[in-house]
Length: 511
Image 1 (tube, rainbow, N blue to C red):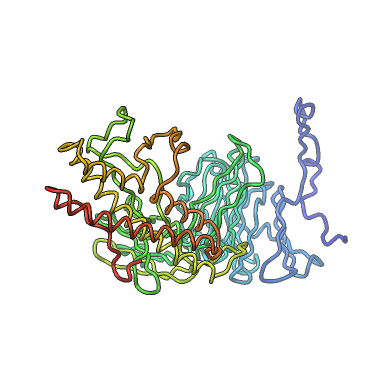
Image 2: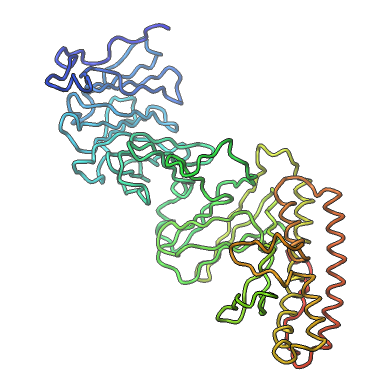
């Protein structure tokens, strides 16, 4: 180590002492001139900026061999205030931003300055941040992607400027009104990380809309922002878990974040994901379509398989009532949900008939041990399983209509016995559902649950289906064909129910 500066503080004896009174016996605070901020320019190695907590700002452009005191050049800089943060620009040489905290000397104003000439002259840029007893500033940060996009943290709020400090607006959302002491923009994912005093770490996920918005966009009726790349992350078990840990954080929704601008509230907003063949593979739920920046999330899931609608009570469970509409949900089996393979997709936003499109890149999990070829083979099988699950659902729906009608008309006849026997091979008629799930442990799973279960096992990795999985799939496919033959035979025997649900027929090329 070598010393590269003199004492850059005031060195005043009056502040190099204990505070006096009873306080030293408690917390032992000491006033002192200390370097509170020190940073090197990302554009010019050896360009060092240093600020103290007694109101001095210095610059060295030669690695510390010489220093220039810039303090007197900041118009209105309060004496003995704290140079809380210094931000040399990542985009323009000679530009830097300074946040000053004056609350310890009784000055509670937001104090921000900007220079474009290595500190020769400074411009105050705090106009628009409301003044109050908690408005003093801790940190000022420049966005790494967009010049002129600034973030400022005060004692009770977070603010953003889209015009290099000429104006500010709150960026609070659900962030509590806590002291914002530090800000970091994670450059790869464009996440704004906020360190508060007393309220933990907060992350504003994906600030790309702030990086892309322009006056023309803000003046328009609607706009779809270009989304950042999405990752096909695999679920991972935590190294340890402490349930109820009050310090535990939460992850953002997985998949792709899709942001769009609305100039006013919109009546009809839809989001679709289109693959390389032009097929719509998913419809994304949109939040309340209010004016401003809106965000939706695509989990990278394709449109899932359907669920059957049961119209009869479970066998041996007369206490299980049907719903008001005369139906109940299936007690076993889930949905087949193929996930997007890595590649390029199109996001299509439609706002009151106006269509916007943007390209979306889906990337592999960087820690995955699988391959694109394996994922592609897996997805092909999952799409087949999804279509087959839908065919089973259609068969169950048909049989349930016929069973309900036949039970009402001829509960003791031979036909109900045949309908029950076939339906039982698709889902166990004894399953009562509910939250206990105990009866699901007593009896083997039937075709519907088997197909969706196979899909669940298959889709949890980035590997191609195993030979065993393909063999099981072949058995299920053969059984489904047999079921559909039986359903067609029984359809001819069911009288007076000619308009029952039709068997599922996958559309050619539909995905």
